[in-house]
Length: 218
Image (cartoon, rainbow, N blue to C red):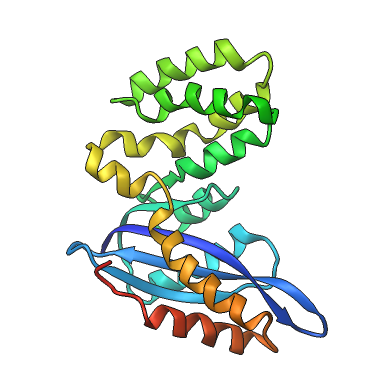
């Protein structure tokens, strides 16, 4: 049983007839003692991400991961349904940082700072009810100019709000994928040094060696 799983994917260049980006899927757990536990790495074929995640999560369940309290992800479409199919009671938490970044895609650059300030009261609200009130205020101010941002938050609301039920210290850990992003930074550094890989096995070996140097308590 794990209190929290963090899932993410990074792209690496693999030569398979020609050099192309291929996703490497990574799952990191936090144990009840607070240690990091890398549960596995998988190379994808570049197809549907949520479908591949379903295969990854099913493998983890078959290996003995019976229960997960919360799974933190970047908001990939279809991933909450994949999680529910494997662990029906697991809470899916969308990364707040990714939600903010995706919001900026629908706004003019000159409004980014204003949008960020307007959304901060939503994700720093003391309760879900307070967050909803602040979101209504945001919608009234910006909804006419940027209706796509409002729809984005409405669509992801169920996966955005779970962290608001916890105290501030826990929120800092589970509100984003930062915990696994620090691991990915180590992997990207190793991958950049190689440029591209002759095959999938070489890419996975490079990632594995980067992970071996991590401090599990960090």
